[in-house]
Image 1 (tube, chains in turn green, red):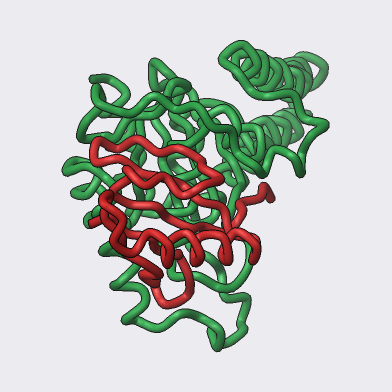
Image 2 (spheres, each protein chain N blue to C red):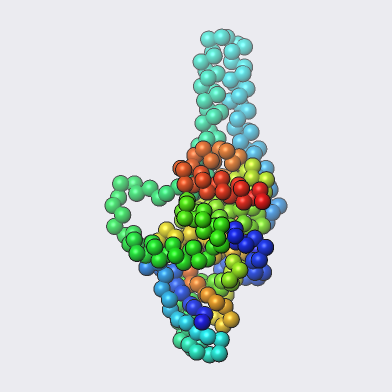
Length: 231
Length: 73
């Protein structure tokens, strides 16, 4: 069950499951224990990648001071590799890149405004303020606070120290940005566990790693999600 | 009045309105079934922020939204 950011205590009891689960029938349905296993696995994976570089950086100068330059390179890799993972995680809420192609098939401005009006009606007051300031929707759920963008979502886990990134989007014809967010919001509210099962996890790790890879609106939305998680 | 709307590239399109006493119910049911046949999924939303996936038109819902499937990736 999820709660509106503005009305965290009044959400309906939810009984349905997402029909999209049929398309990923091989995936076990996500629950809190599964998310915790994912977090632990990503932590072990990150440590496993960091330790060899850090040991190399620490050990080489003992062999010869001239190898210090290689230590610097090893430290660089130790910083770069987790950054690349976090950058991929932040990319789920990044604005779509045009890749040089003209936006010929995009919905018009009127459609964007109409979609934004509906989305604003669907969320509570606090979430509406965040939406108007950042373009993202916040939604509190059982697994944490969700930050929804047009093509993905960040899940701020309880305690707000970790973030999970999910790639997930509405299929079919091109839609206004707010409509794409509305698709994710409705699916999330209807079946949070199903939503997390259908979506593709792209990152799990420290919030600060993801935050520094976000642009300003997404960073502000993440800060608002953290504040909501702390309430 | 309850409303049936479809999320589409125009922002959204209102397909039908009905009232619990029967006004417009047949038209709403017909439109609902047609959109499900076209691959849309239906979500009934409540005034308090809840939502429920539905396969039949819930006559007591204030707003029923038809959406496209979502997918990961």
